[in-house]
Length: 250
Length: 310
Image (cartoon, rainbow over all chains, first blue to last red; front, side, top):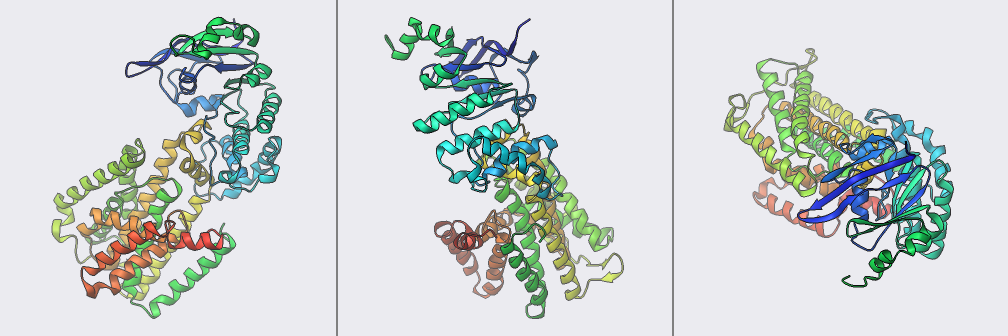
């Protein structure tokens, strides 16, 4: 009946009397870039943690591709094609850029419990890994340990690693946070390129990025959905303006 | 060679040459003890160095391996290779249970749970009739390898222990450089990220734990046959501490570090024995110096200086 890929109803998470996410009904349409915005502490990251099962919801349900995933483990959700990135750049610091991407690619082999086999068995993924690194502009850093890359390049590497899983849906937690202008432009261009055939839900503070990139926006404030719609509609909403400027009791 | 880098191959050949040459100049029983502890430390390093798990109760697997190898060799008259395998399987089985319980927690809690379980195991060994309590299991026969080759001669026994050590060492190296090892390193670096890539990390941690405990059991079993004795010392928490010390002094997360660490601590015990309790004080001082001055351990620091991996 609907073309939504991810849907939540009544999603709630309480931490000892504090309601971080309250009765959120989110609907992300397949093939769109959907932004989740809101002031600090609005529950955006908690929401991400709930959607990817890193946190258990107190109440409510989550459906992905029509399937109830509320009771699944985080690794299972990832295997279904719902893959997240993290707010702080999450790379494997002592592994090279190539190895970082390859760890994601080798998921296709299945369990990877074969401790008796040489890791030369993984070299079949090298070409694909190089192609992915090339795609995010890291071809010069293939053999550099990820920990030595600049912040912007770490984020690019993280996206390459996520893309290696070829996920149907990507959840990006502040992909441009703390970046220089050039890096922001590079990431935005990258997201535009990789969106084909995918759905992206992203938390983003940079409103100009949201304006240029996103098809739909959900505004969260104090754990609740404050407004929904496209950029023009949402930015004209007085409740949103008040939440961002903290007019009365912020 | 064997998946070693060039520097590692050179180091491996040096180690091999030393293992072959050493018994002609040094006391073979001391060298066998050294090799058993080196294997124990390498097994421990598999967990702390490549998965980032600090087990504070590895004496449980080492000691139970030692007890079971001694008991089966003495009571059932198992041949030495079978007794040592029985020790390894016991270590692995105990590691399955303890590991399954412990990996549910992270960091210091993980260490505390492994310590608590190892202490329970210690009291079990103290009370259980088959271990001989305070006396331990004594006069364990070395037997004949495959029922053919008597091991009473120290040089013959040394050859067997050297082969066991090398096999264990190479197995660990293979585990680290396998598709499985690659996932382990990812978990060590960033567990939530590994989960978000679709890996059920608990399963990987548990398998690593079982492998480590099994190899610790083999090391314990070999030691029991070398000395013909299995005692409470092997399951005591001081033994758990000693393996941590060896690995940190040598350099955790390096291939050769635990071996060098075992060499340093055991040599100190052996050559400083005449100074009595000074051994403990010297060990303590070295440990403090290591933590303060070269955190990467002896091999870790050398490797970092030369910009190679050892």
